[in-house]
Length: 443
Image 1 (spheres, rainbow, N blue to C red):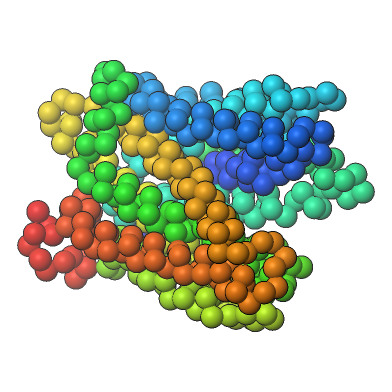
Image 2 (cartoon, helix red, strand yellow):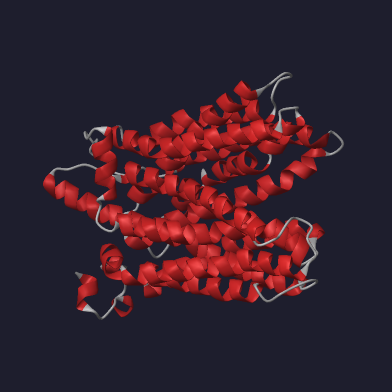
C-alpha cells in the first residue's frame, strides 16, 4: 500500500486491460488496409469501407456511453465486450479465402464495437473507482502505462511473426497471440480490479442524456482543449514516417524512433503523477504542452542526418505525450466526481459513461481531422513522398512541426483562460502549497 492508501496490486489490476485494448487498436489503423488490398480488394474500395466503418464507430461512441449510464455495471459491460473483440480480431486479421468487402465491413464494425464498449466502460470504471483526485491520476497512469506497452508490442510483433510466411501470415499469427493476451489481462482486470460504488442508473432518453453530459460543469471546455491539443499531437503521428524518410533520410531507423517515443512516454507517467501532486493537474498538463512546443520548435530546425538530435526529440516529445495521456482523463475524472457528488445530493444520476463516450468520439475525430488537414496541406505546399527539393522538405517540416506548435499554443491559451472552472474540481485535493492564491480559483 502506498502513501495514498491504495494497494499497488489494485492499480496494476485495473490498468492491465489497457494492454490488449491498445494492442488491438494498432492493427486496425496500420495493417488492415494493406492486408485487404493485398487480398485483392481495390485500394479505393478498402478506403471507402474503412471510412464508413470509422464514421459508424465514432458516431456510436456517445450512444454507447449513454447506454453505460443506463446500466452502469462497468465490469459486466467489459466482460460482454471482450469476446466480441477477441473473435472479431481473429476474423479480421485471419480472413478466410474469398473474404470480400462485406466481410471487411462487418468485421470492422464488430471489432470497433467491442473495442469501444470495453474502452469506454474501462475509462468510466477508472474515473469512478478512486475516492480522491490523486488516486484518480494513479489509476489513469496505470491504464496508460499498460496501453503504451501494448502499442509497442503490437508494433514489434508483426515483422517477427511474419518470418518467411509474409505479412498476411504474420497478421494471422498476431491475432492468435492477441487472444491469450486478451484472456490473461482481461481476466486480471475483471477478477482483481476494485469496483466503484454502485452508480444510480440514468433514466434520460438518448438525446437528453448526451446533452446533459455536455452540460457537466467544465466538461465542454475541457473537451475543447482536449480536441485542439489532440489534433496537434495527431498531425506528427500522421506525418512522422515521411519526415524520418525524407527530411532525416533515416527510413531504417523509423521503428527505433517510434520505440524511443513510446518508451519515453511510458517512463514519464510516474513523473507526471508526482508533478501533478505538487502543482496540480492543470498546471502539470500546461508544463507538458510547453515541453511539446519547445521540442517541436527544435524539430523544425533539423535536417538530413541529424539522427542523435531527433532521438532526443523523440524522448522529450514522448515525455510530453505522457502528460497528454495521463492528465486530461484524470481532470475529467475530477469533474465527474464533483458532478456525481452534486447529483447524489439532488438524487440524480451519473454522466460518466456519456462523457467518456464523447471523449472517445473526439479522440477518433482528432485522428481523422489530423490526416484530413495534414496530408492535403502537404500536397498543396508541393510535397510528395520521396521529394528532395528544399522547398518541399521545408513544407514537410512546417506541417510536421510548426503547425502542431501553433495548435499547442492555442490549447495552452484555452486551458489557461478556463483554468478557474477546470481547477475547481481538484483544488481541494491539492496540498496547500500547490493551490492557487486566487480566491476565484478555489470557488
